[in-house]
Length: 427
Image (cartoon, rainbow, N blue to C red; front, side):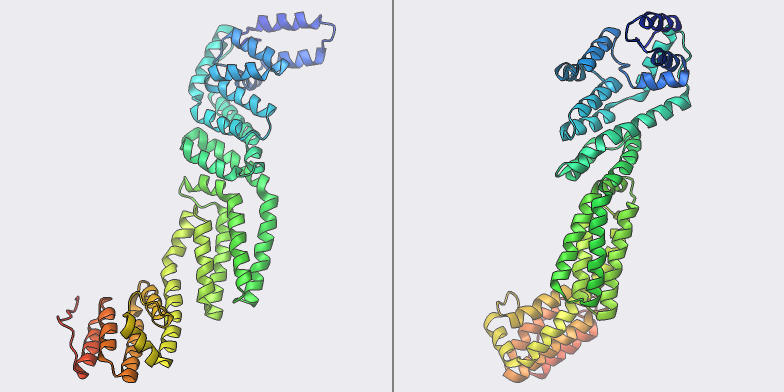
């Protein structure tokens, strides 16, 4: 029936069809009831082609019956609004797992203006002698349709290789509006169900690996396995993370996983002082869970502490080695300077000092003191004033405290050296 069919038109059509040889009286009665009921009629109207005229609607009906995809594609290219959207759904039905068709469905939703469609349907109702569409019923019908579209399109993104990446790119492309917010909320439910099994398998492996790391926290193979698994798990969940991040929210499921693994970093740091492994896992969380703004913010505030602990541990170890080989250390500094020195004995001290000092906060002087000790030991073993002068000039560029700077300058004066200029207390 055309969208503006009246009561009389509907009764007449039922009478005519009832005389067809293969007619089904119950089906005809049901169809008549749906078109005469205001609520049921709306579900029929919104599932059809409101923006098309009666002739085009008839042509589309014939193409659907014959499954003439070429004609349907042509009609879709000429259609707008809900008519175009419904024709996209038809195309996706006939071409399962076509990611381009699935993407077009999302784009068509972004283009749809429901208010314009409702106006067209109300005009048709007025011509047929029916009451206008109830506002609450219209909102409910639009929401139901969006949920149906989400259910239609989601399996394509969960079953096609790289589907998650395609969906993320599409979310960013279409931007944000009220319709898409409702659509993506519905899509989250279907997407989550679609990847639930795969995510559950990966999560079980993460839990098992986490427990093993607690027993053997220095096992590099286990650490690499955990980092790889976190990447896999988050990849499945990323589209939902992106949808929630667009609203400045963290996806709750991803947030729970993030916090569970983050607790492992705290355990490793506190129970084993294994700052290296804790830092690796924390960096993996930041890399793999890029769309959790609130979780990331909390972890990022603690990253300087982890980096300082790693850098200071490495520095103390490097300085202990340098002191035990003080004469060799002095020789390397004398021959290659302190910065960009190719010798591991020197470069380990320099690189780890720089890593730790950037995150030291109020513990900066501890780092200066340990390198100062190495400098004094290198001078004592070599009696080469240029070695300690080279190291001290480098250290002073990092602005030690006023008291420590004066102490270092006093060290130099005691062996007859002086650094030009005067250190000023920044306060």
